Figure 1 (cartoon, rainbow, N blue to C red):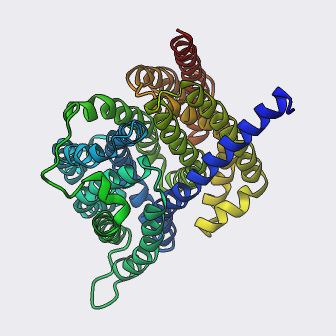
Figure 2 (tube, rainbow, N blue to C red):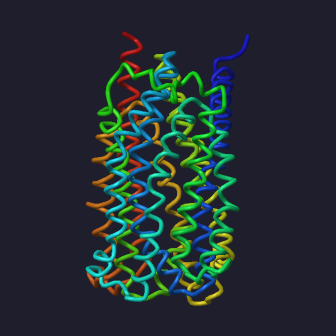
Figure 3 (cartoon, one colour):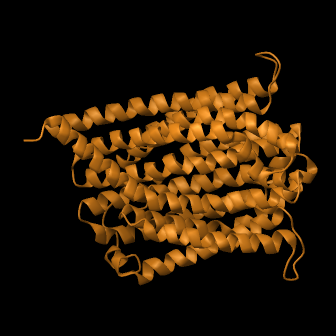
Length: 460
């Protein structure tokens, strides 16, 4: 007869393997998407530090808007997972269609913001050369916003059903498309003028429409999606209307916006210090974003499995998934932090040959290594809470951690003499570590309370 401890170990191992199996194709899809930003950064950096800085400053506006829309649409994942778990797969497609109609006004507002970002750059006293590149980059990439909204909506439908492989394959296919388009637009091939960093925006737009088209064809042609009724316009969602997406998605989108806007403000605050400092910060941020894809992918798997378990009213399984997922995220963060500390110099050298940029970037990468552990904890806890459809209180916690604690501390360390001599970009990264640690603690407490409440329900 197996001992209770052995049974528990087997259960934990099974859940860990299930999370990893689900997270692996999600990770490949996330990395392929992040690779688009990586390719932009590297290819723009090979033109000049000014072009790299222009893409970085433009990205500081694009990134928060992109993440906000991504966050709003992320609400589809727990909605679909819970419907699927409850045996209502036929309702997932109509609900996703309703979500598309609901989110489009936000997309058009985002396009207007991107196309008028030069006003922000003027107010923030961004270097005129950098501002011109950033503004034109944003105007170009704004045409890709409808495509990325449709793609994410369909991707979240697919992943909510536990089908992550299609978005992985589409994401991987988009990389060579982006590289080829970057080469043509940045360096002026096929009779086109050389656009430098601005060309990255046009290349990204073409890549986003390519991904959107592929995802639409996938949902239309592959038989496994026919049960969702996405293209069956005679089928309508019988549950809550579009307000459900906004009620769940807006707090997620705002939470991601709050976090991303921190990085946007940092890039803008650092811009008066020159292209070298901005480029160093951008290298660290871009590398950090790529590493973050691992815990983020595991977290997506946590949301799906927690949502599915709750749909089946298996609260014990939902709690187990949360616990195992957090442990996996912490383990991954420890490994990636060690890698960053050991290879910081080599990592910076991938992005640029400029010795000044490398020197500053290496220092920031050292700080980033310590940033990764609380970041992995908070994203895992937030994902588990999303599986419970708990998004509003986590938003408040994130605002407290990032804007009430993190940003004021970072500004005072980086640009004022409140704590002594200002230390530039390092001050902001130190404050990010502290802010993330606070977020991790608050979200962890919230998840623990949620677990206790579900345990109580399960025993009644």
